[in-house]
Length: 244
Image (tube, rainbow, N blue to C red; front, side, top):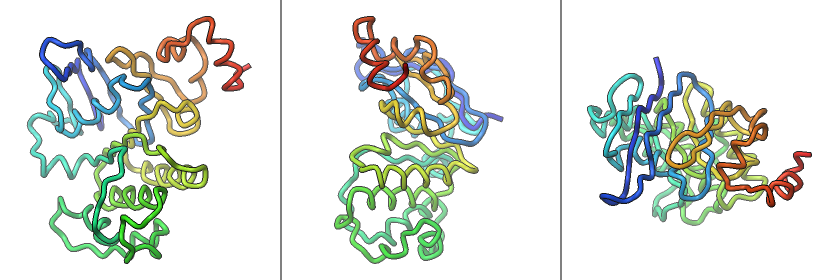
C-alpha cells in the first residue's frame, strides 16, 4: 500500500489564472526522506498545503495510506500527517508545552521528559520558545513532530537560516524521524537534495518533471531545465558545483 498517492492534481490560486499544480502525479510506498526540489514559486509549498487540506485542489485525488484525503476529517488527518512550515512563528510557550502539542490529536497526557532526552532537548524544557536561537527553535518544532507520531511528515524548507552546525543537527533528526515514516521536505538547495534522502522529485511547471536519486541528481539535463540553466550558464553551473 502506498503511504501517499497523488493523481492528476490541479490547483490555481485564482479562477482562470495559470495553474500552480498542473496534473501532478506522485506515489511513495516506503519510508525515508524525500526531497521536493524546484525553483522558487514552482509549487512545492502549494503541494504540501494541499496534502494537509489547507488548500483544496480544483481537480485530482490524493490518497493517504489508501484513503481518499477528501473523506478524512481534520482531527483524523492530524494523526496521519504532520506539517512544519518554513517560517518560525512567535509562540509564547515553554519548550515542554510545545512538545506536548504533538499529543493533541490523541487527547492524552504527555510527559515531555522522555522524548526530550532522546532528542537532546532536556536542557531546554523550561525555556521560553521565543528566547531560543533559530537552530534551537527548529529542533524543538521538529521534536513536536516526533511526538505527533504521524506516518507522513511534511516540512517546508527545514534548513532555512541555519548555520552548518544546526544544519547537521536537523539533518540527523530528519534521518531518525524517517526510519519508520515518510518525510517529505521542500528545498531549492542542490546541496541538501544531493546529500539527504532516498529520492529527489524535480518539480517544474506544476508537475513532477523527473524522479532522481541523490547519486544521479546531476546526470542528464533535467536539472538544467528545471532551474533554467541555459548553455551560457551551464559551464558556470558545472564549475560552481564542482561537477567537472
